[in-house]
Image (cartoon, rainbow, N blue to C red):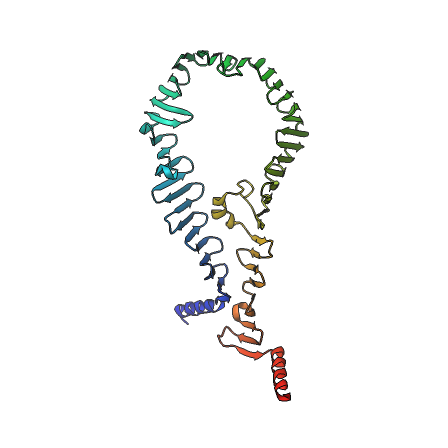
Length: 494
């Protein structure tokens, strides 16, 4: 027999063993792990998976998703909105009519389009190339380190530089700073404002009625008067590491041999705090803050609505949040090894629960729907990250289970090698290629080895099929025969 004929015969046998099955309006076609196809005409849903979790094509109403995990994911809809992710987080692109945004590992970024739709109209290749359009100043560009101008970047209203660090100019409010051979020489000018610095030797700047700053051999010595135009001016003085003090109407702090000994009093927030040494030993007393820290043995500290406790840091932590809107408690072991989060919103009564045990499993319950996954390699570190969920998590989820409070249930093991679905009184399950079973309003059906033996049961009859053949042998059920005989007997008596 030639190789071509053998190929055709094998292909024909695969088609027989992978024959589609129906449950109501749903269609299921499986040939694990090569093909998994599911569709529902009522919900306009189609899903095709190839090679387990590697390839996905799915349509839901007007939305279409395509994934070649973990390399590419793309979603589109009929309104023209599209999202593309390539080896997330390496490349992300989002677009809709009139706008486009893309980001390459947070180093190359572009966002152009209509400002009414949230576009910033800027482009950068960090830290070298910057281009954008400011609503008030117009277009700008910069090519680091050669020169250019930036608006609204790095906390400054305007930045201009040439052959950086040779020269740099920044503006924030009415304050202008010129840097020469940054950070060594600088000059400050502005409205009633002046200053200069020869870093790290000496520097001073002041604005009449607002602030006054001086440093010498930075960061050893500095003397500052801040917020002079407010009702709570602050003075700071330091000779590090020997002494540092801060003083205002509402706040006092003294530090000796930083970071070993420190005392803080916040009269506005009504608490006192002693650190000896920071951050290992801390005692806090007051209304908004109180607690004791003796790391690594024990810590119990409350800051307003948040309470945090440590036992044998970093082994075990309990964190509580109690406000008028939300109650939340989280238990953690070794930071990310184990985490248990329970949350309840008091205004709506909505509850949420999330348990992660890295890397073994993750559990999540919200809005009455629960989900359990094993393994969970990245879920613990990026909870709720939908991009990780789309492109990476399906690759290692050997076991998945999803259920709700109405009793609906979906289980998948080894990417549908075994799957189990229950919706109301309807049930479908399969262990490829040994058996698959369906139960719905029309009856039940059991197939062994994808159709080598098939049994179909209806209320009035049972059918048997063999050897993947499309013909069936059917006979009426005894209960149906008894009912028919009773009808005939009643007619004869009449």
